[in-house]
Image 1 (cartoon, helix red, strand yellow):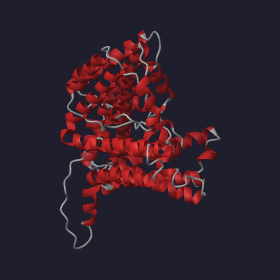
Image 2 (spheres, one colour):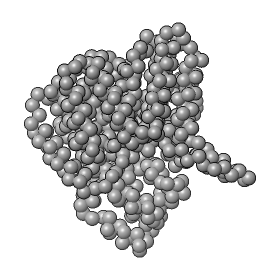
Image 3 (cartoon, helix red, strand yellow):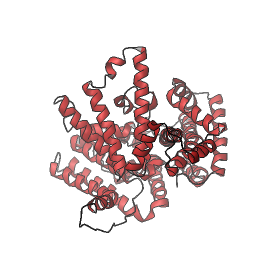
Image 4 (tube, rainbow, N blue to C red):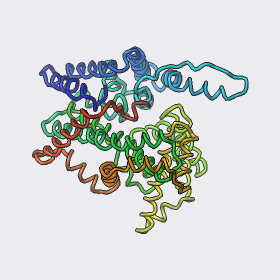
Amino acid sequence: MVFSSAIFLFCFLPAVFLLYQLPFGRRWQNALLAAASLVFYAFGNLQYVPLFLLSILINYLTGLLLGGPCQRSRAVLAVNLVLNLGILCVFKYTDFLIRNLNLIPGVSLQPVGLILPIGISFFTFQGLSYTIDVYRRPEEYSRSFLKLLLYISFFPQLIAGPIVRWGDIAAQIDSRVSSPEKTSAGIRRYIVGLSKKLLLADTAALVADAVFAAETGDFRLAWLGGICYTLQIYFDFSGYSDMAIGMGKMFGFTIKENFLFPYTADSIRDFWKKWHISLSTWFREYLYYPLGGNRKGKARAALNRLFVFFCTGLWHGANWTFVLWGLGHGLLASLEGSGVIPVERLRKHTVGRLVCRLYTLLAVMLLFTLFRADTVAQGFGLIAAMFRFRTAGSAAVLLAVLSSPAVIALCCAALLLSVDPLGAKLHGWLTAERDRALLPSVCCLLLFALSAMALAQSGFHPFIYFQF
């Protein structure tokens, strides 16, 4: 069950929201949301509900120990890290390790074929953030299993984030405030996210999927595929985050922003301040700073960045394409930090700022091309095709089919909205909390109607980050 499916949109969400309005108090609301979250998870991953509950129980018991008799115990924290990361690694990386071991002459191991539990990377990191924060501040631990269950399993952000810290949400579990304005803003935010997914991301996906499946050497098609996937992944994932934040508001929660128009960035480091903010914050707080951050000189800071981005890439998936994507970002961020790529100097001038933005967009798009590819060879092959400037007859025919005015106009509009400040202003106008929001509400109703029609005409299109 995904946020953009008919069963979620017209059955699950309305039922939960109406039951939530019953006047039975906060404990009823928390229990309802926790139960609904388990049903939501079980709908597509029933066999792994016990594993999911075990993960939550491990973190709950660890919190009791770290907040009680074993305060600041490194041994308890170490056991928790081994258990959490062990579960993640077994399910996510066993076959990846076997495939790489099989490259050694004489080694022939059979893949295990474990099915990856949906959202395991997200709920594992959310659980780890809780236990690490309790280790640092024992007084913040939760005595209530129900509250921790709701914190980790809350269905709007369970499958693909944002990764929420316990300290940001704990007080809201007990004393969140709802209002008609907040609910209205939440519904409009959800519709904006739904529109991003169904109208923009899925349209761009039609082109991107066709190009990557064709594996063409035509430079026009290679550029079109890279650009369309760059649009697809942004509108797909930011759309999901909009829906999660909007549904949080509908139930009284305030969830922090996860995207701040990242394609307006003028450096790779700036990009990561605006892209998937909850994940970059997680790695900064729980890995980069403990490694020493930038406190031990530029060389050590560069190594720390490379390691963090290596882990970021590996977190996304068990494929060398993800690892190289992460290392590419880490290398560019390190070169910027050391001044080899002089973004700080260039930013001081108008032309320089434009150069920085173009460099960042190009780097992001090329790395996303590698990220999307099935293999490293396919990814580098498409990137190489972009700069060979060769055409191919069959690819040219496919290019003509894919380059219909409607598709290109929609993708250009999406590009303008993701890069130009107009996008930020329009987004804020549609989703802001206000006493009177008649015109934005009418616009959102029109977007919802268009999204419903697109949903009726299209097949099943899961969110990209569901696979992580």
